[in-house]
Every structure is written in structure tokens, then in C-alpha cells.
Image (cartoon, rainbow, N blue to C red):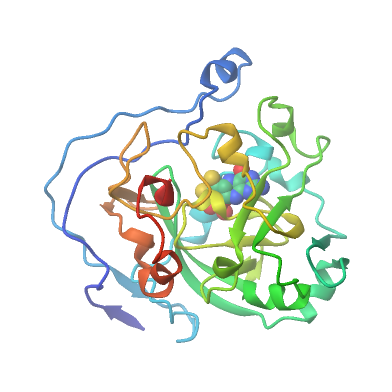
Length: 321
Ligand code: MTE
């Protein structure tokens, strides 16, 4: 099947280049001989025509495409060989190193403000939820983008299983951390383990997803096996990989990237092309596996589903960093 039409969320042309993830300890990194992250400049406005996007569907159902990816899927090889998984190092080329991630057995602890804290195995969890495929665009804060057919289940199913108390207002995700398997944990100034958070309203939004596979296969280790968050309207760093604990809490949690670089990355991290980071523009994104860049769209084009979550809030930079 080939669908070809202009999408409602495609914006007129605007500016700029893609960049690399950055944090404020560059000197320390360089001193320890780690990978040197690129710090870019903001490029100049370019005038080129907006590329008409297409979906080529190699056997995905209408259900899988109900959130209108509006772009061709990224070739599997690109998604699996271009990763951010800092526990394995700062380069994008960690897919081989990540094969040391021990995924069996895998347990997830659910605790905090819930009726009864519990731990369950990944295998048991999968039996309790409805697994489906969803094709989503994923926009990294570094201004690159992929489109992925994820397998997994609605995050709201997990919230239901957890039976949170009414006092629970946020979720905090903690991910696997073992220095023996993960050389990146030796990078001293990162506040390991990687941790992220969401409001309850975000976690129970229809789009919020727990990814357990991609391209009809179990989640590759480098992409966050066996279970990760998938939040297509937010910058990719919100989508914590290899989750081992979910706590239900009263107060907004401080996140890994907020602690690392508070002037660059915040709690909300909703995609918005109008708010550059301190170091680069977010106006455009580079489509991995192609030589194209296209305009970025607010909420990564998913505003129809999520804009109402933020309706009463101050629409300032904080909501979009
Ligand atoms: N989760 C953990 N545990 N560690 C990480 O370094 N990187 C985040 C996010 N989740 C990260 C993580 C970032 S910055 C992005 S863009 C996505 O994972 C990348 O997912 P991908 O490699 O599957 O494309």
C-alpha cells in the first residue's frame, strides 16, 4: 500500500540545522578522553520545498498507522545502529557494546503511592496487557528523527495494573544500571541510574506507550530491551530505556537530564520548533537514513492528542525544553 498526501501537521519552511546532544560538562568529558560531543552553531534559514512524505506499508495494519506517521518508516538497520544509550558510551555506535545488557530474567518493581507495591517479571507483565503495533515518529532533542513501528502496550494499562492511590500525581521511571555490563556508568558526573518522569495525565494519555519490540521483533538491546517508554510528542530523552522500576509519587521528580544540564533540558520536553536550545535551533530535523531535513512541528505533530494536557499551563520555554 502506498499513501501519498500532504499532512496537516507539515508546516511552512523555516530555518536551521541539526545538532548533537550537549551538556555542560564538556570539558570534563574531553579530559577523560570520552567521545567529544559536537556543539553546533545555528544555521541560516534555507529555502527549499517541503518534501512530500509517503508511507510505504510492508504489512502493517490500519490500527498500527492510526496515529498517522505521515512519513516512510526508517529502515530497521538505521534505527538499530544509531542510538543514544549513554550507559554504553556517548557515541551513536553502541549497538555492539549494548549486547552485554542482561535481559533475562527481567523484573520491574512497581511501588510508591500504589495500593500494594509489587515486583513482576517482564514475561508475566506481557501476559497481562494487550500488545499492539504503533508507528510513531521519534524526535531527538539533537534534531534527528526516525519513524518506527513499535510493538508494546498502552502505558495506561500499566498504570491500571499498578493501582495508584489518588495522592499519586507523577510517575518516576528508573532504568537498569550495572557497571559490569555498562561502561558508560564510569562517566562520573552523570546522576546514574538514568531516570525520567511524567505526570499521571501524560502517562495515561492515549499516545503514551511502553515499547517491547520493533519491526515485528523483540526490542533490540541497544534500543532499550526489554521494555522502554515511547512518548512521541516529547524529545526522545523522555523515553527511558530498559526500565526496572516505576514509582508513583506526589511531587514532580527531578530527571536525569535536568540534574545534568538544567539550562538545556527540563522536565516537560515537549517538542516545539520555536524554542531553540541554548546551542542550536529546533526548527528542523534530519531524517535518519536519508539526506533530508524537514521542518519540526509542535508536539512533533501529535498536538491533536496531547495539546489539551498543557492547556492551563504557561506556554513558555520551560514547557518545551
Ligand atoms: N534511556 C536510557 N536508559 N539511557 C539513555 O541514554 N537516551 C535517550 C532515550 N532513552 C537514553 C534513554 C535519548 S537522548 C534518546 S533520543 C532515545 O533514548 C534514543 O532511542 P533510540 O536509540 O532507540 O533511537
